[in-house]
Length: 293
Image 1 (cartoon, rainbow, N blue to C red):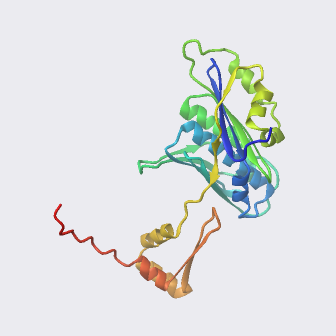
Image 2 (cartoon, rainbow, N blue to C red):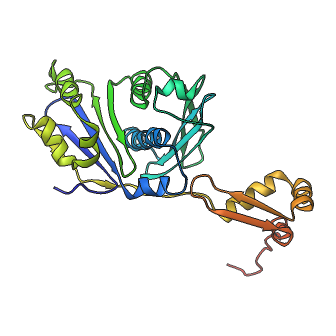
Image 3 (spheres, helix red, strand yellow):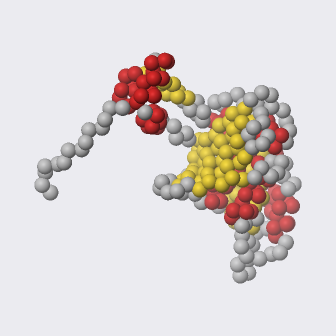
């Protein structure tokens, strides 16, 4: 069976307190890495974080966006992945010097992992600092989910130059007859046999069948994942307004134009003096209508 490209698939263990998700990123992943020449080890780490972001955003049922950030003092300076509840993804990374294969903590150094939940309706954002405990993106996020959601959660992630993917399993609260003392251990031990190439190349249905063909599993329709960057010329104009006319004029006096480059999608926005004048033109007040209603 050909694997669906750029999709999230959910499944449920019938009559058991256990659920799962599988994500496949192909074209979306290419949109992320084609814009920058990432070192292989950093590329794969970012791919795992992208897959994890989709899985967690779906699990948390976001009405807004989730931003995962790794800030480092080592060779890896920054990893950022943003995924919305509508399954819109973007990502970028910064690094210095040579990057060789090694432990995540060795590459990040004395870093921190930050998770931000940003509501769509403009409500107050939630931000949590996650300890860098574990040798992988999966282990760090498993600890976060267990502490924050009080639900046992496991992740299996993989990425290469073509695809990124992963699987999530979550133990649900037992209700009524929905209980099986061994189901969690049984399900996770089977999932531990997964190889990275299986995560990246098997379809969701084939992967679930390979692991759980002896279980009664219900598969749900796949949900599409897309690459989308929220940058725009209007957003850059708003940023210039926040900086202020005086500072913008000083920059233009030195450089003749202001160039803003989006780290996520590589889009380039240029503002010269005429553009800046237009940015700071006052919007005329709305005149009250004399029409009687």
